[in-house]
Each structure stands twice: as structure tokens, then as C-alpha cells.
Amino acid sequence: MVVTDQPTALRLVEDLVDREDWRADLRATRLAMLRRLVGGMSWRTGLITGVTRTQLGEAAGRRVRTVSKLLAWAVDAGLLVVVERGASASFLGSRSNRAPSYAVVHHGPVVLPPAPGVAQVDAPDHALPVDGSCNPPQVAAGTTPLTTRGLLRSREQPTDWPAWQIPATGRERTAAASTLLARMGVAHRVPLWRARAMLRRWWDDGACVAGLLHAVDHLPGDATPRGDAIRGAANPLAVLGHRLRPWRGRLAELPAHLAGLHGDYRARQAAALAAGTAAAAVSEPTRAPMTTPEVRATARAELGATLLANKRRRAAAGTAPAPA
Image (spheres, rainbow, N blue to C red):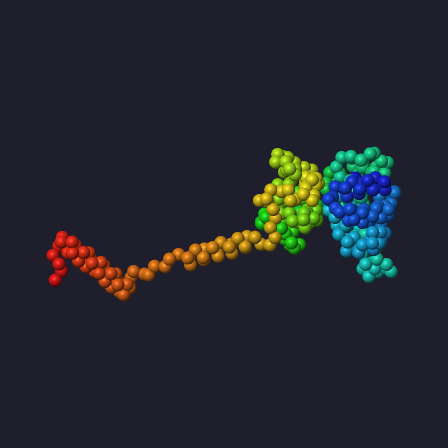
């Protein structure tokens, strides 16, 4: 459904932002930008037109790049639909650029208090059907997804990130987040970029994949498993953030064998194993090969000397005649 009432749209924005595990400062700035966007909504059609990225950035003191990331998140989260994309003045042949047009949408059954400004798109008399291509859909918008970009983006192959290694770079954090989602069985249901953003603080605090898997299933100081509530959740990322919240500032209480390790610990283990193997090979007593003529002659001489000494000892004891 397309929302045409600003108070209802603001409730949707605040509800969606509350589900994200953002820091207080990030939450405040992003709410300010989203509220400025909703302030440009038409009460008649619900369309948001004429609001530029520069204006949104000024509402929170942020750059245009940050605004673009926020709008991409809002589209992927199902809050906004791009009805008409922006265009430059040179392309339009006009004196000014054209700002994109957006619509605030709400999916699924209505869970908010009824408001007169919420237009049901499956009612033909007042529907405002829109989709991501700006073309009127052939079927009711209520029976088809308005956008699938978020679903397609999340279908990335999981990476086999070392379970005990703490990620340090952006590429490593992406691999670690992908591995964690794959281990929980929700890799294809969660946008990877959103999971990476939510898990950033945990990697910075020294967590690893093995430790977070334990934290998801246990409370601090309690060895009783909490059960698998993420795999079948409607919003797995929100449940993940809720399960990890009790462990804020308490990662030291994780079992000792689940502590995160900095650097490539698997390479260190392989190097230590190779060094131990080399040391064992050096400490092993060396034996001369028994195949050269010199070694065989030495052995025969030693054997002859031993036999002669035994013969003389027996002669001295009177058990055999003395040697000539």
C-alpha cells in the first residue's frame, strides 16, 4: 500500500529504524533525514517530489554520499519506492535538474493504527499503483513485490571465513558476516550489506564468528541453549540483533575456547607445525648408510675384532687352546 498520510509515514520510519541496531548518533541523523524526506510528501497523492539529496544532507549535517546510502537502505528495506528517477538539466534540456520522486509504502497486513491517509492499492477507486520501473503494473500491486533488488543482492555465495579470526578490513568483515549468516541458515534471506553494518561493532569489540554463534544461542552466564528462533523468523536480522544485545560489553564472558584471534591464525598454526616437524627431523639421530664398500669393510673389521677377543678370552679360561 502507498502511504499518503505524513504521521503514518513517520510511524513507519520510526518503527523501521528502531529495528536496526544502530548507534544513537547514527540513528538520530538518519531519522532527521528521513523525517525531512517525509516532510515533502503530498497529502493528496503520497508522492515525494522536489526534495534533493543536498536538502536531506543539510537536515542532518551529512554529505550527499551518506544520503545516497540511506536512500538505498530505505529502498532495500521496503520503505521507499522510486517512482521517477532524477535527471540532469542537460538531459532534460531545462535550466534545473529534476529530483527523484519517491513513495512511502507499507507491505503486508496493516499493523499500525488505522489512519485516513493510508490508501489501499488493491481498491481500484483510489489506488495509486507504482513499481520500480515507473510503469503502471498489469496486476494489483498488493499481490506482487514492489521491488526485488534487496532479495537479489542478498543471494551471494557464503565465504569460508576462519571461525576464530577477527576481521579487520572491509573485505574481511563482509566475508565474516557472510559466513555467520550461512552458519545460521539465513544467508539468502538477509541483505549482506545490512548484516555487515549491524555486525561492525561486534568485530571492532573483538568478536569472531564462533563466539557470535555461541552468543546467539546463549545468555551471558547461562549454559542453557535458547533455541533456534532466527531460521524461521520473519526478520532474521532483527532477531539476531535482539539475541546479541545482552552480550554488549560482556564478550569476555564467552568461553575461553571461543575467544577471537587477531591475524591469520591458521597461517601461524601451519608455520608452527612446519617448524616443529623440521625440529624433529634435525633432532633425530643420523645413521650412516650401510651400502658403501667402506662401511661394509669397517663392519667386517669390527666383527672380526670382536670374534678374536672372544676366542682369546675363552683360551685364557682354559676352554679352548690358545691361538697360534
